Length: 99
Image (cartoon, rainbow, N blue to C red; front, side, top):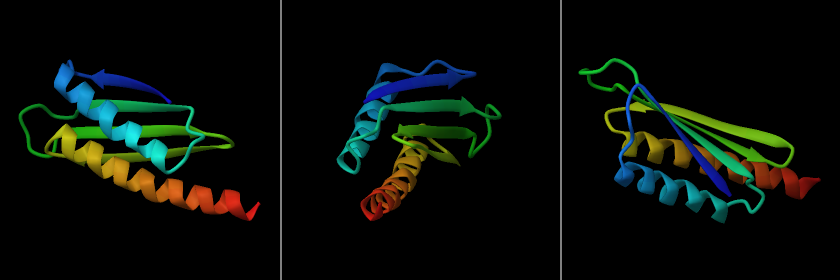
């Protein structure tokens, strides 16, 4: 799976990028057919709480899965998005089995 990371209004450090790579790559356990993952990180209003927005878009055969969360840290929002996408991937796999 190819993971693309885009940052808006800031520069992501290597530690954060490694964390995202590691966390998003774990989603492959739930579905083998993930082609790409596009991760978008954005700082909404600098110097305020709950100003980190993360969105993750997964390209799977015949569909596209998406999750977007806002929180205090990017690690927190990446985890929340990954959890949401895990549930979406499980539903996607169930639909594929029924076909």
